[in-house]
Image (tube, rainbow, N blue to C red):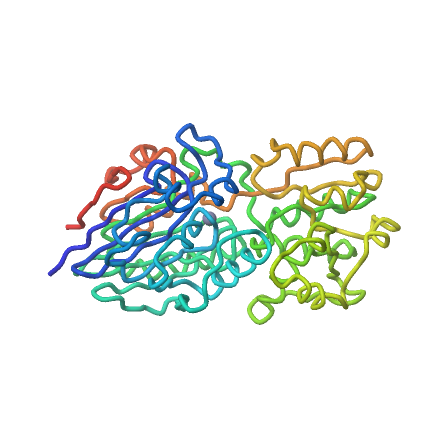
Length: 435
Ligand SMILES: [Zn+2]
């Protein structure tokens, strides 16, 4: 019987840039093809700079992992599987050979579509997309793969169970236990109770990165609601609309406080894409959700812009209306929208910042904070991590009880050894055989 060979090309000692190769006999698949987030000094990469590089420049700079046939000519792998649509898992897809099919959830394909249209992210060409349905195994040569929905900070995430040659691997992708749907992870654990996992490729973002607060998504929704209740003026909300659970929290808080939620076209488009799968209201004239079109978008050359603006025309709201009664609205905001307010926010505007706080050190956000202060406003950090908290890593791994743990997506894989005896530490590009 053929053995499974595993090569983690990137991510054994870093967060981001995930790319894992799994081979059994002549069958070979790639799990995620991500852009790195950090350089060797753990400083955040300028991702727009990375995205402007040619394939050759990416290769010379060591950004493209050296995987046989994935990016260059030669015999291509049988498939690429994407765990979720974050760029540190998908960003190199556009450089891969176009003949390789891409397996992922329908949710991930939708998030990639929206990210491609609105946020200069990688989209997934229709002709390459092969849908993976939750908990329905697929066969690729000698490998059987099952996708399990897991909770993370973007819609549509999967963990992958890979079985071949009598052995099994579980790749967690990115996940957490403190989201709106911890039951997703429970159903994964229920299935795994019946199976012996030989190797667990476990994300360990919070070994090496502080957990932040320990709020779960429901507690965060309460915090958001409280902050809106305390505000007597406009509330701005800054978060990724692909993080649909966070979107749900903001919309529910809007409803509870009797305000109107002002979406941008990106958010409205996501609501539209998910209308048959997520119970959320759609934008409507004078409804709970209305749509403001930022000047930068209106004047941009984004693909399909006119069509999208037309689609939400009936629910459109203008800046004048918002400024007349700012206390009636919660408005999606990004730092590029400062000009929409002519550089002056309504008096006492609060901004609920619900993203990674590293972005606050960048010039755009620094200016926003200065302008908020000028009119007696404020910015508050209302966020909880998309990744499994350090204490939850320990309980989750214990429940799976794998033969061996291979840490990925972590700066400090050694921390796993403080909790478990059966940790296999490997380096980027090293091949490990499951015996
Ligand atoms: Zn992620």
